[in-house]
Amino acid sequence: MKPFNIKSLFNSFISNDIAIDLGTASTLIYMKDEGIVLNEPSVVAIDLRTNKPLAVGFQAKEMLGKTPQEIKAVRPMKDGVIADFEVVEEMLRYFITKVEKSKIIIRPRVIVCVPSGITAVEMRAVRDSVEHSGVRDVFLVSEPVAAAVGVGLPVDKPKGSMVIDIGGGTSEIAVIALNGIVTNNSIRVGGDEMDEAIIQYVKKNYNLLIGEQTTEKIKTTIGSAYKLDEELELEIKGIDLVEGIPKTIKLTSEEIREALREPVYMIVSAIKQALEKTPPELASDIIDQGIVMTGGGSLLKNFDKLVSKETGLRVTIAENPIECVVRGSGKILENLSFYEKIIIQTSR
Image 1 (cartoon, rainbow, N blue to C red):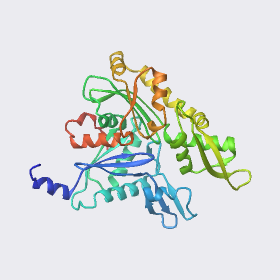
Image 2 (image 1 turned 30 degrees about the vertical axis):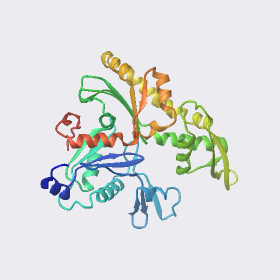
Image 3 (image 1 turned 90 degrees about the horizontal axis):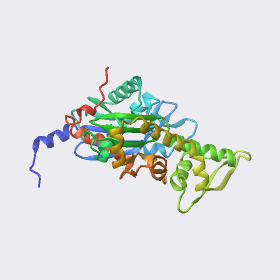
């Protein structure tokens, strides 16, 4: 049994530092000493008459594509960066208040994960939005580095570790050694582009208009990057663009694989480019160690098999890939002095 520590107990009541994976598709929050305390969609429903949020997270996502004219459900993040500052602030304020509800005195310190290809302007926008949502200090860390820490790779050693983090808005490919990114490739292609590819395929081939939630169901149920051992079928519903009435069709996994071919191969091409830029000594480490895939996009069926076939390297998908980035930033939060070199320095 751990000894009773009154100072630790007192600190936990007055404030608790948090790490945030502010993603295009979902936002995850890790609280120091508690682990992951929130995982909700990055969606906000706004009342257009008052311009105030009506719902955030799961409640707002349920409204996507179903709202009357006076309500709008929006995703305030696009391609891994902020598209609507005010809505992001409202969303973060809601999430932070939700997880910090028992902390009453000191505002928390926050680590936020950002894409490795983010510009200085976008970086300042993230920091400012998080600060305005009611926190004390903001630290930024690169998503692939956080993912590597979350997976447990030896980022502080003189040994190359390669991580592919496929999120909703970006795909981050990085080779990491000695607490820094040696080579990286950040492209604004991820789960959202896969969804859009499916929507366009169904529209072009079946004259059928489908919504976001149907698209997500197609991608997760029968979507794949490489041929399956047993091909699948799914019945879906949408609006017939010719007749203007609801219609049901059947889709196959082969069709969806064809629909996803362009965004999937853009990610594969980015992986190859990152490998080409990798120094020979680190490349030999990657041959020995292989590549680790994280992020929600890595859950697309057989994506690891396709990457392995195209690169000739061993590829593994991390356990709980969606949580790797926030778990890594949580580890950094727990030991800021050890991971000091990983923190991105930003000027105000």
